[in-house]
Image (tube, rainbow, N blue to C red; front, side):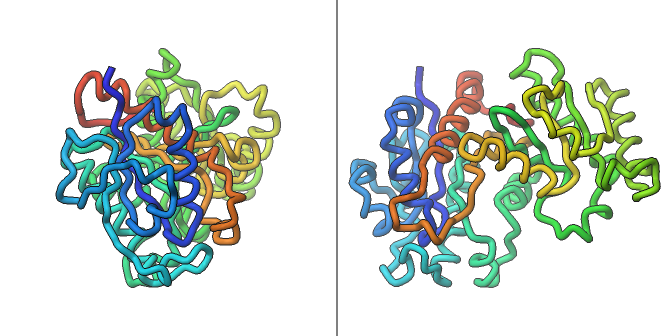
Length: 335
């Protein structure tokens, strides 16, 4: 069987992305499970002996038939790629790697995407409008997407992504939540070979206490759950988030749709930090990422664990395998 071609963006050249990628791509499981197409900075990646065997290509030279490759998007001077010392040029570069990866995906040159962590702050400082990979990918591919933190013990999808808390209530609506529940159910159904059992959290403490602590549950979340159920989604809610996650080993649900970023990510990272993978649902091809950031304090020290990156790469390959077997198709990527 032909191995899936996983396109990988290097992330922040001053973060831990380059070093954890170098370690991860040397892993026997990764080497045997996928064809890496790495988009990044030549001088930064050439520091690592494990990456020197990759064919060097310029972005325009990549084809759907290229083997393992390092696509040289930038050639940064050393001062702009110092570990733990982010730079303006590095901020521009890390966005350029993602954009080159997206272009390769649209050209059919890769079967899945895996993104190393970037710094939103450093990218925004360059004047670019960037709020996260998920938002960029949704815009680039023109589709509605859903962020799923996919871990061994909990799977948490986010109704809203990178929003200030004050903006979350206004971003929730019955049509949007209904569509998200349908997407989550459709994406997980192939894994379980049945409709997955989904929980939906409330927004307010104690799921609003019947309107005493807020009425979003009554006005928006409960009607969305009811509408999704009428459309064949096996979902329950709104449920108080604190009690729902109290005993993850006994949770009767396959996944949970939470209302805002930290309501779900605090749980996912506390329980399964190294094994949780960020999966973007709804794209025409799979996208994964480790669930950590650039970790400037660890960059260059050799102390950063490559386990999350290995897990994310293997998950991308796993998701891409059935797609590669049947040929490219539009629609939700399965998780």
